[in-house]
Length: 75
Image (cartoon, rainbow, N blue to C red):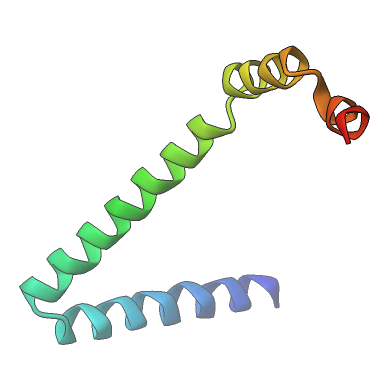
C-alpha cells in the first residue's frame, strides 16, 4: 500500500512538472530563475548579518557603551 502511494506521488509530481513546464515560456522561466537566485542571495546576506563574528562585534560595542544600565543612570 505504501509502495502504491509512493508510485502515485512520483507519477503525479512528474505529471505536474511536465504540465507546468509546457505552459511556461522562456522569459517566465528566466524570471523565476532570477527571482530564486535573488532569494538565495538575500538569504546568504542575512546569514552573514547574524554570523558569530558580527554578533560578537555588536556585543563588544554594547559593552563598551556601558550597556542599557548606563542610560538609566544618566536620567
